[in-house]
Length: 185
Image 1 (cartoon, helix red, strand yellow):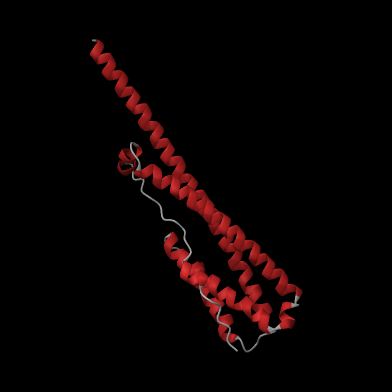
Image 2 (cartoon, rainbow, N blue to C red):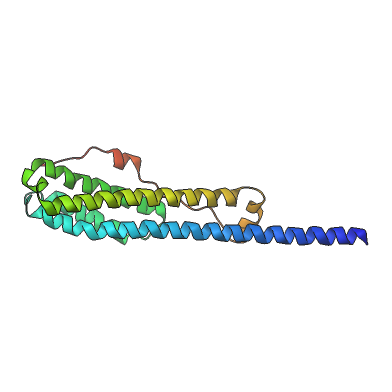
């Protein structure tokens, strides 16, 4: 009789621990989703600012058509990319490179550098880039915590059976981010 009580107590304890682990995994998955949403919000803000920036630059740098078209193409590619974080990070890296080229144009056009609208857009984009960076760090921290939980014992035993799997990090391609800005005249 005592053996059955101990066995029943262990079974109840295992169920309680299992429920706790499951609830933790659900909470972590929700944190990852919430933090990804924050990244998407900041990316949307950047996508909305880019056409205004391009229009402002067009008035001053009319013969820089290729650079401006590259920005619009990179924006549209990033905007339409609904793939996994790695794919979106690649599109965002290309967009960041194209934006750097536009800002490099301001060095060649002093009147553009002095334009209040351009300066305001440049400041807003800079702030947005910082917010994207913060949101990316927050997202990646949540992904790290989720991945650790799905890969460590004992939660790894339940994670696979309940469909929890490691998430992808949102990493910008360092080669694109560090590439020199090409300014064509």
